Length: 313
Image (cartoon, rainbow, N blue to C red; front, side):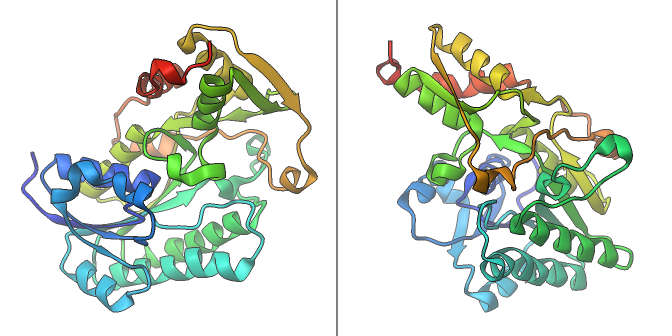
C-alpha cells in the first residue's frame, strides 16, 4: 500500500470519479471531492469509503477548490457535463472548457500532477485509415477539443498534465446518469426487466466498450507510475457491435430476449459516432501493461448484481 497522500477528485460523486475515489480509499489515501451535493443517489456511490473522504466541495466554491488543490498531492479532474446532445454552447463551455481551464492552469502553474478526463468524442467519425484524427460532431466534443489544444500547448513548458480520451466506459455506479447511462447498462436493464432490447437499425454500429475498473487503473498509472505528459486513448482497442453486446447479455441471463430495431432519430443522427476504437500504442509505449477486460468479462461483473426477482422469465 502506498503511503497515505491527499488527492482531489472533481466529479468524485459521479460515475468514473466515484470509482477513482474508491480505488484511492482502498489504497489508504485521503480524498477531497469536488461535486454538487444535490443527489442522494450520487452520494451513495462513495458511501462505502466515506471515512476516507476529507470533504465534498461545491464546484462553485472556487476559492476552496484552489485551497484544497494547493494542499493536495495531485488532482484527478473528472468533472464535466457529458450530455452529448446538449446544444447550448455557453452552458457546455462553462461546465467543461472554462472549469477545466481553471483546474489545469492552476495545476500547471503550481507544478501539480493532474490527470484529466477528455473523451473519444473528439474523433467523431474521422476516418483513421485516411489519416483523419479530429472531427467533433457536437458541442460536447468541441469543448473537449479546445481543452486538449490548450493542454498540448502548455505541456511543452509545464509537463504535469495528462488528458485521457475515454472511449465507451461502463460499469458500476452509473445508474444516476439516466438517459446518459452507458449502453451496456441500458441494455442490461432492458433485458433483465422487460425481456427485450431496443437497438438502432441494424445493430452493427461498433463501440470500444471499456470497463470502468480498467479506466481507473489507467488513471492510477499516470498519477503514481508515469511522469509523462500528453494525451492518451483509453479503451480496449477491440470494438464490438451492439448486436454482440445484446447476445452477450442474452447468454449471461440464460434466456431468450426479444430484439427490436428502431430508426435513429434525426436529432441524434447528426451527433452519432458509427464506430469507435482506441489506439493503445501510445499507452503501451508509456509502460502501461494492464490487461483490459473483454466485454464478456465486463458484463459478467455487472449481471451478478441483478437479483433473480429483477429478471423477466
